[in-house]
Length: 361
Image (tube, rainbow, N blue to C red):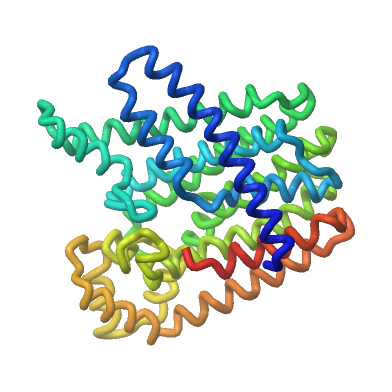
């Protein structure tokens, strides 16, 4: 990303953080007026939302607005910032369902509240308290995402159009999350099923729907079958899948110092990713037995993780996933150059695509 585009993306991120900071301060005042015991809830969600995150969803909403030929005002950025609250809900619940210990180098929310329970010498089971708190904080983030969008100040027409996309996006996200949970119970890995999960659990709500959301804020009359939204889908869907495939690679081969997650964590959790489905399709004999035996073992040592990484690479699956990412990226870039996209938006869309595909965390 060149300096000018990097500066633009940084400015959007800063504006989103500013809106989130103001909103969370208002919610802190309200929650702590109910009971001082809610202070740790405010602290945890503020830390979660303000101290990390790539702000990709607001960035793609911003790009969708630009693609329609307009530049967002503070009001629209406030509406786009609500997507960070939806993301918080998804991540908090995802970490709980996966049993993950960390997120962005810090304890996952359920572990954080488990620790608070122990530190306060509270009665009952610390683990159960942490799990319950994570369910409720995730739900609260979901409610806040609605509340922030509804109270953003969008015009009636823009809000009505945005809500249509917003509702569809949340339905797709929950469908993808359930399919991901169900996939863990399947006896055999499937590339096709894993790709579908990647599309619905991550790709659509990370990229395609935020693009649509921004576009209809700028152009409320745009229908779901308009040329602009169709082109944004042609750009966003392959990019969303490439984004998730990169995530799959980072979940096994990423640097913990960069990802904020332990090395090879997806192997310990036994995640049914496209990468693992491709690996098991290719692996044979003793290599396949070794992989099947160790996937999902939370006690895997660093040495065993490294051994499994070598096996995965030797099957050729990593190279195949990289080729698939490249092909999907080409599809996305071709769509970004469509005449339906406002010329001013194209460099930003192309730069975001590169960021999503080539990222290291």
